[in-house]
Length: 434
Image 1 (cartoon, rainbow, N blue to C red):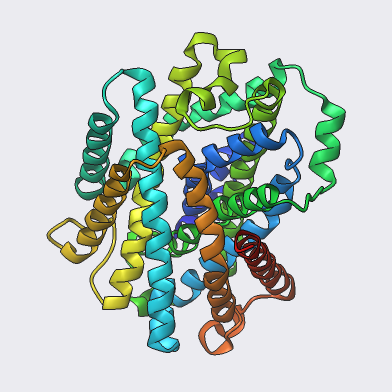
Image 2: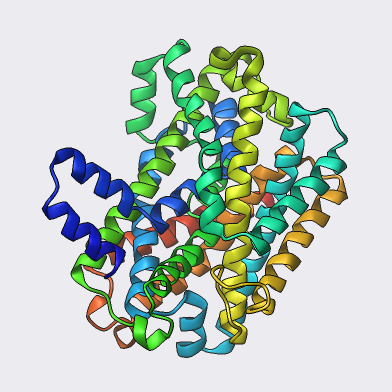
């Protein structure tokens, strides 16, 4: 029986507390994907947002929630119904040049993001132990690569997610620091747009780190791995999805995206009330970023910040490298899956190693690791629109999806997401060209 089927059965015979336990137990790929969205790049971008603009862009948290939830639901539904990953479907149903462009864009975005995360983890590690940046970088890269290749991801993700609990310190800071709750409410509910290059750059960064390309492919791949865990090892056996499976998938996705955006909102609010109010509008180092946590952590702010960055980084790096590896393996018809051993899928793990090493090498160019988080988010925002268009074409393709094509609301929200991100990216590129 599937995870969704078991949850539905247990839910019917459980009391109120039992239902909550069943709900938490049933959460899977959507929750992990949502948690990984608050990776070091996300933390850096949201911190910079609050530091640079105060509360002015708080509205982006509730605004992006339905956009990312619908996008991830479409990706999950495609995988559950077809039994195939996104790259595999593009290979089967669309011209090869389209496939190659999509996979190349994903690989570039993921590798740059991965490199930025590794650099930020190394810079944050220096807050714990004052060793050279290069020493921390080598150590972090080695540990991350070893975990990806030799340890089951689901197993160590259960441990690492406890480190990410340090992110809830931003929630506490928001309540212990002086806040203008009236202004917070207005900026959360009423969008304000400034026609400036910096504001547009930051908006693209927020969209890019919130609705990221790697999340699309990872969500689809993990839905498939869930089915493989149930013994459905072929695409034919995985094909088809029940109403119960769709119901629990949507619960999972909405829960994960809601958690992600709540954390996003609190990071922006906290940075706005602590950094912006002190005139610290440019975050270019880990110590500056950690200042946002001082109201609650005091001298332990650096420790708390480092734990959050390293924990979320170790959780997200395998997703960044893994989603690219899934796409390339599907393109080249290689055996893939994090459930497989190295000897069973050498090509798949080879891509993970290659992507991680390129990310490592990017940090040897002298780029500021904290600034790199921000510009990695901007790159994601520029690359995401064409991939979103491809996902919408697949989701609306009746030949592929049969009776599980996008509904009117999903289709409308999905296309609006793609168009808005394309307009924001185009506007940014035009402003930079002036």
